[in-house]
Length: 322
Image (cartoon, rainbow, N blue to C red; front, side, top):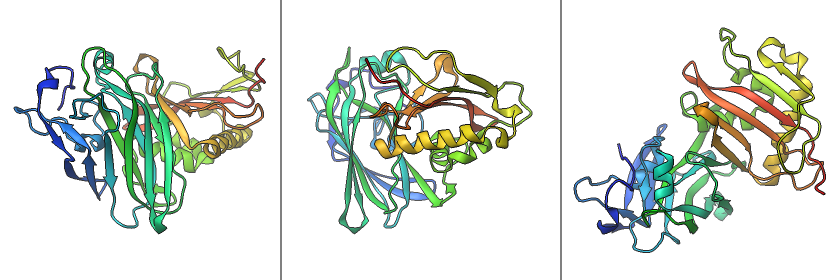
């Protein structure tokens, strides 16, 4: 397992141009190609682009050029007809906050999807300076056309405090078998997020089992401030103690908020929750208009060998900024 490109004097290492690796993820063969890779004489492949797909936060891809990493890229190639539902991109080296800050990481990146029928779709991903170690951008690709390839290109960089080498931890695709089946669902969070995005009204199926003692709080806010902390919720209750029929209004509100965010940008933020308590998913951007449905925040935690929803905030409407 790679410990991160800050642990050794890596800038003196050799580089390999356009390295390619073959990876099988959830029975799908993928060709992974990079513009360059940092090579280590005593540990060949330590920073291979194949690490982008191993879903292990302790392994990374590191570019091998002598510049700051701007213009470097990684690309995933899929077999014809592959139904890709989403992508999860984790910048930097998230093994620790120290490693995350020590090495360079993307500030902006462009995701280019080549689709069937000679179509193309581009996204611009922006990671602010305070984007946390271990955080990701979840791209909820919602098109029906299969993806032939996906290229992630670094447009600008946050320099490392100690080393110049740029790192990316993951670039994970989510595959769909049918409308309700996602490969890898269970121990891996990205496919479970795809279940939520496609079937929001069935969120009760993503709650922990009724055997647990910890409540799953749902909080609702009729209005939220344009900036600053949330006010007290207008209601709060334990989802596990209510039948779905008793909170269907809230379930529909969540579905509308998710749909609103999806239509707006298809980009979502996945960040570590405080004290190592799972991850929080919310729209990457606030609503474009005060009445737009795009406000929600949902926390996930690994419970009983599966990712489960353990907290949900619904923010129905954002106040007009002063």
